[in-house]
Structure formats: structure tokens, C-alpha cells
Amino acid sequence: MKIIYNVTVNIEETVHTEWLQWMKETHIPEVMATGKFIDNRFCKVLSDDPQGITYSIQYLCENHEILEDYMKNDAPKLQRAHNVKYEGKFVAFRTLLKMVE
Image (cartoon, rainbow, N blue to C red; front, side, top):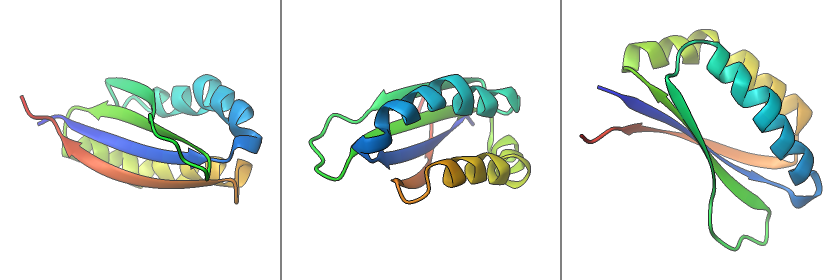
């Protein structure tokens, strides 16, 4: 059963351009380099939000066991790097989605 690990991030406009480049050139490639995901999508949420700009980053995983391994062994370091770099400039939440085939 394929799982989508969805990370929704609202980023402040003051760091938006830098964050967008960092996500595309550094963070998402680092997540994919873990080998735990088979695909990803980087989407801008189409809504007017006075608090910032919102994105949905979706990573496709083969199954829940692989995702659990990522969450335990890879996510803490990658999330820490994001948190340190953009502390106080973003809000994020994560959801797991089951593919309906």
C-alpha cells in the first residue's frame, strides 16, 4: 500500500525566495537521497494567506514500514536542518495519505 508523506509549510514572505531555492536545490534532494521515497511533488497552495505563502511537499513511499524507517532514522536530522535555518519564519504540519487506487 503506497503512502504519501505530505508536509505543508507556510513560509514568511521575507525569506520565501531563499527558502524556495533551498527546498528545490538542497532539502528535497536530501530527502530523496535517503532512498526511502520513489517520487515527490512540490506544490504551491492556491489560497490567499496574509500570513505567508503555503506549499505542500508530497513524498511517495512504497509502504508504511519504509516510511517509519525514514521517520525514525532520517527525518529528525533533515527537519532539524530546516528548523535551524528558518526558525520563527515558518509553520509546518505533516500528514500521511493513503493512495486510493
